[in-house]
Image 1 (cartoon, rainbow, N blue to C red):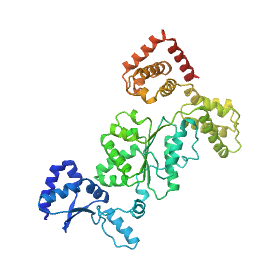
Image 2: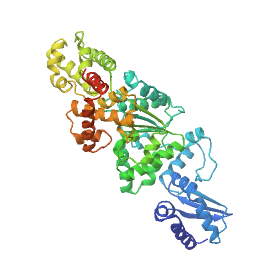
Image 3: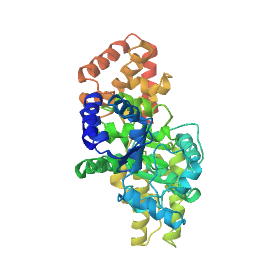
Length: 471
């Protein structure tokens, strides 16, 4: 078969497969050999060859036969001179073997052998974010609000097969999502150095993809991300509304799950509550284990402070902290762990500079601004959670679209309390309730005000909820 004949067949394939598929997957193919019923093509990377072999080999063979070229099998080999071919040759030479092109139709070796034999991309080639040495399992304080997330993260960090994939961690700011992500990566690197673990933020994933589009190196991007053993993406809500990035993330996700590779994702809310995230991605994210990191309770905050204080006592030798100070801080600062730890850091630094014992009076003077900001500021999220717990409904239902009476009434109560106990505007409250219009919030508030006059049980519930939230 001549190159002219292959050119005609390519035109037919373009008509059959569409312009995008043709441009991406067929046009780069170069016919290298045709004999004994086998058509061999050169491809830029092994990933490219695998993909074409799985998705388009039958189309190519059918069109070849339809044009009088008798072909029983189609093979794809990495084009000599490419980066991947060179890496393969170096690996083969190091083992004393003659370099040869690997065909995509060749029989696969067992997974463990394949991993040991394949040329690995150097760690510096992985486009990941640096890991924080402080964020380990040893430094993570476990309490009731985060015990399930901690247990799931520990299970993934063992490096063996798990029954849930992906692991999806979500919660508000400063509750430990990123800490657990880093801890998993640290533990995997220590336990299983043979695994390729990639941790990065969703923003970095998007940046790398855009850069690959600009540099016309999408195939390298695909191969790199699909070759990892564990993919960890932080703050996935940032890809919402980015159509091209979502498309690539979706295909990367599917490719890794198909290969039984572990995925760990974090976000500031549950998958179903991320606005502008494609439904098919929400569905994929919900097919594993979805874990909510709840706001810290008093016991957990006190445990975090005690651990941090022990660390600072070693750093600031000679400093003493009076009884009751840590308990005072655990009770007063309830926003998030970062604010809590920052307050203790400032307190120890100030006491060291002035050479005084850390007493309750010193604490109140040094942290006056933080204490004022933390003075029982009730949040909409806290209201939603308390109301959901009181009426025994799921938090996702309260924010979601369901209109059943046993869900709609608690939702209206939460709207009413949000208006009463927070300084947030009606449009802002609406956004926190699944993107509802401010008129919906106004209707819910008025409905509760009307019912309070006639429904004594509702009035009692409201008083109890207010005490719980303001206590």
